[in-house]
Image (cartoon, rainbow, N blue to C red; front, side):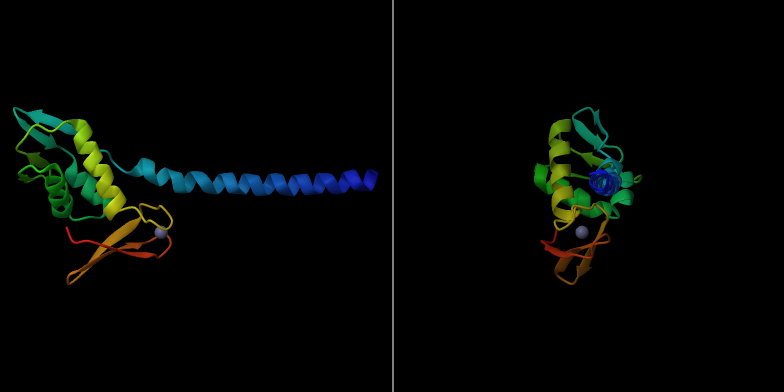
Length: 145
Ligand SMILES: [Zn+2]
């Protein structure tokens, strides 16, 4: 009986270790989502400014023009990039609409569908566009923006 409980302890200990290791791995992957900057929206009269589009583009390793085109097309509004790579939209757009279209961009053009990492790059080969995941190596074809 004494031997049995000794074995049980050993098994429990190992199980606990595995559990701890599993927990240690989780936050690393989850934290990537927290590293993604959110749009900072301001209004200039009837115009909407996404102040930090340049910073977002840097962090996502994306061309700011692609994010601009995707957002303007999705919002159905005219606009452009300013010298500091902030995005000016010639229409009043709610912060919620900006956040929604940005979330869609992340899902379609940034996040790896295979492993859910945001650590990816967008590659253009002629008319073919694809996301290459730097975490798992998966390649996902996407429509051109
Ligand atoms: Zn991946």
